[in-house]
Image 1 (spheres, rainbow, N blue to C red):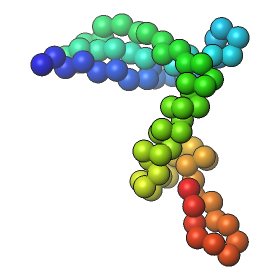
Image 2 (cartoon, rainbow, N blue to C red):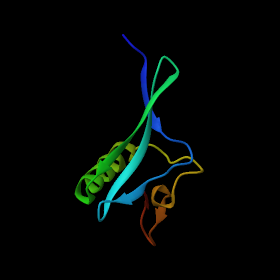
Image 3 (cartoon, helix red, strand yellow):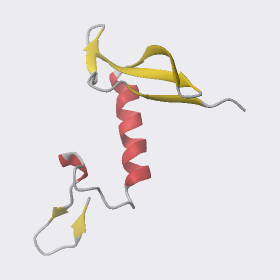
Length: 83
């Protein structure tokens, strides 16, 4: 089995392309050696589906201290804490 890895490119974040689609630069490496950079392009609908799937998958995990604001717990008056 080969050791392929795909990770976000450090310092290059998500950006808008093609009239509103989103592009995330990804670096592809094999065996610890850089192979290529490619962009994952998502329509807004696909980005929303990915966001919902990630929120669902992360829902039971407590957010780390440096998590984005959308992952921080919200306290509603008179009810339990929600994420």
